Image 1 (cartoon, rainbow, N blue to C red):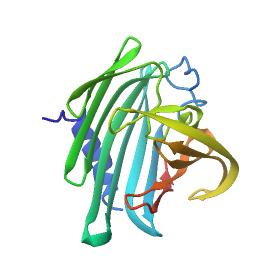
Image 2: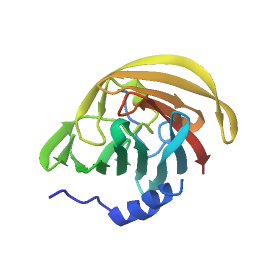
Image 3: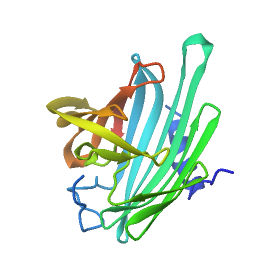
Image 4: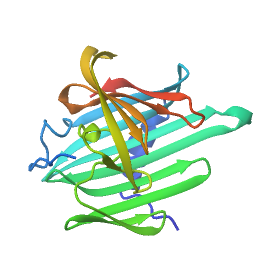
Length: 228
């Protein structure tokens, strides 16, 4: 039996419901504007071939000695042969003293459901992925993309399956990007290897855009719609 998400009701009400209408040393403080985004939220549209096919949301919160991120993503669109691609992901990360302290996610892809649960004990994260026991040691950043140090490490922790992903990173320089608040200067990076992503980070260490190959090789684009 798959383990349910921690604070599942909060995630479902706060993220999923809102979606339907549409390798460096960590900081010593639990939150730093140089490392973590300011408290608030980011709402994105997911586009495929110029059409909106889903939504994604991040919510950032400060707590006593901790920083937490909840996120949700939903996609629905047709594939060749009359099939329908359906994807739903809900997750929560808690960081303490700059280190990932816990990770809880649930992913629904088609008819398959996968759950991941990790908690830090000493210098490692322990838990289960798909019902199997796993452990991950050391300082890790997940593939959820929001962390500004994502393009500065060669190994990322899969936020769906708990597996480490080896990546190559190519900095693509600065780029002006249109956002709902106007044009801003961003830093763009290309990740390749076990995952492929193009990432744009703007002021206040915030992810502003991303793109990646879809299930049939087409490009999906994460485009910012609202920032609070």
